[in-house]
Image 1 (cartoon, rainbow, N blue to C red):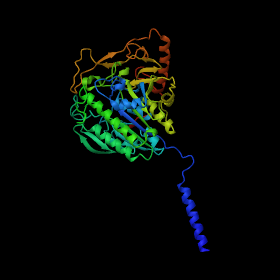
Image 2: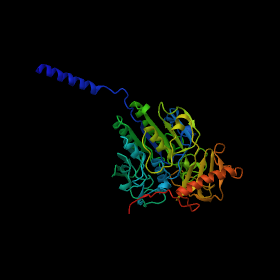
Image 3: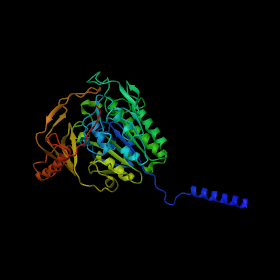
Image 4: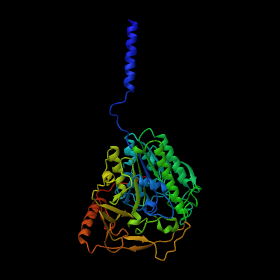
Length: 474
């Protein structure tokens, strides 16, 4: 009897082991990894695939060849903190009460109640890591680790907010380098910064390659002050700025190759873009607009149109370019769609561009450009752009630009009337068509009126009903 019982026990145990090791007939596919690479002050013309000739960007060229390049991709705000808020939340930053660029004195930051890409994906079981420039509040209450990121390594604000600033010396404290919420060093020079960011990014990928992950790699460069490691010093024809771009390109190549080496290419979407256009007053230390009008700090296309490449092997077409407009507010809802995640509970402004990326199906809808303290300066719709009367900065025609990291002074111009541009025929915004197309002007202005009722507009003294409180520390 004992032998029979023992034999039955072994049989049951063997059957149980067999059952536990068998794979289900229809296993759930692993959710896609997301890598979002965000450069700082990178110009529309700074990549070879967008027209650069004085330096090479072979790794970004390869990313574009293996993915899709967007030729009319915009940020809604041509300034650091606001642009980053819009990217990570899918909402216009003025809806969130975020304007300009926070420094070390700021008592504000992204409100903890706002949901970021990281918070959404973390709730779906993702490992979430950030490396690089944050700039959404430097106080502990506002750091990346309080906004959904498991880990953080980088600078809490811009790399020029340090004692060596060329115009406001000794205003800023030593530049802090953070690991999670702890200051682990202060930087007196930055030549290893891009390399350090890259190493931390690669380590995060290695550590989380067996689970879905979201990596947000926000480079501090090519925002001034420019620094480059020895391996790229003197490598470009242009000088230091070109060297810096080539090192950023190398960094993208390192991340891209890591994904290939780990066999994750078919399950990873890589997005590369920038927070705004080039800071033109820095002359040879600024990037290129490829002829677009003006630069950072303006709502002309040189300030808000940025390079953008999306790559996901087998999902996004290879070697394709898209001429339809899209904006960084669309990144979050696109990621939500492909990861089958819920949208934030609070209202956002972006919409998924997955149909545009994969099938070329564009949805006609307006986009808005804001600057200063909630000024609605322009509205886009399809190929049209309507620019509203406002004051903007420009380089003096006789300005002698420098190549030593010292900026020249801007002058300011008042745009006195609405101007209309057909960007499909006039991407450089030179030919005002407002008088020839009053119907288009009226249509776009009506769209702007809806935005004014929702989010306000300082230019028309409009109060919005859809604005939310920014995060504050007393």
